[in-house]
Amino acid sequence: MQRRFIDYLIISFKGMAMGAADAVPGVSGGTIAFISGIYEELIATISNVNLFTLKILKTEGFIAFWKKLNGNFILALLTGIIISFVSFMKLAKYLIEYHPVLIWSFFFGLIIASIYFVGKQITKWSLSAMLVVVIGALIAYYITSLPSLANNENPFFLFIAGAIAICAMILPGISGSFILVILGAYKTLSDAIDSLDFKKVIIFALGAIVGLLSFSRVLKWLFKHYHNLTLALLTGFIFGSLNKIWPWKQTISVMHDGSGTEIPFENISKLGTLSVYQKNIDNFDSYKTIIEQSILPSHFSEINNQIDAQTFSAMGLMLVGFLSIFILEKIGNKAN
Image 1 (cartoon, rainbow, N blue to C red):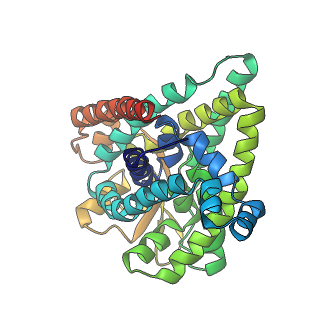
Image 2: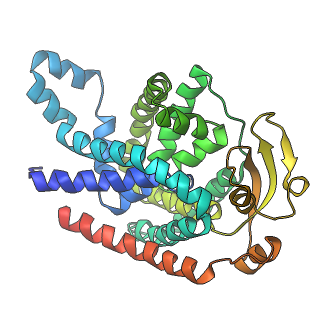
């Protein structure tokens, strides 16, 4: 495939969209890759990295190796992902802390549109495909309902967390950042990036590389032999992930950052949602959510001292997120 500089620039922009999505717990960069039309090329490119490819470097030189590696594609995409992920993580943290309903509303609309776009790639619907969609949705719903673990800074744990999270990051519908939250590694990684703790970042990155090279081969095989069923599974994953990013939540229990003990949230505050309580006291580090449930905007307002549920603003941002996917798909189709 002969590409011009402008094509690689567009790929970098797609990478930036993926990185921004992966920085938000609950949103998958894999979904963005799929919608923008680079998903299968990404999986094929990653799975082609093996000992044979490295042997080409020795026998035929760097240019042949770089071409076999699809190096320009990887470089352009990774540049966008890294720049966006590192820079957007701080912004995402701020938005999640101070404007959670609005940011989740935008991504909820985005994911709703993604279900349609991934699902329409299925060329033939069958009973087995519909069953796989349901299974995928149940798996994703279960994962997004899991309680979070306490923060862990052990180097071996960070390596394993990197390997697991990167597998989720390349699966549409499963959020790598949310997996980090569940494992208790999200804060550790974000703090390491904030403080430029390169040792922790490198350990995490090495785990991610190992996980990526292994899992991409599985995905490539699935797409080759079970294309429709794989798409059906991914559609289910995206549908099931809606549970996590529904904007209005009631907090059931939290974990104290110092002791690591689980506490019913009603023992801490008369408010019903941790993010509202944390914003009121301007302290976002003492507690983190362990168990929460999705509720209606009216109930959200009721359990939080009649706070404005921002329903109209949220609906507007859902629409913006929904339309963003249509725009992204158009860009992807033009570039391809």
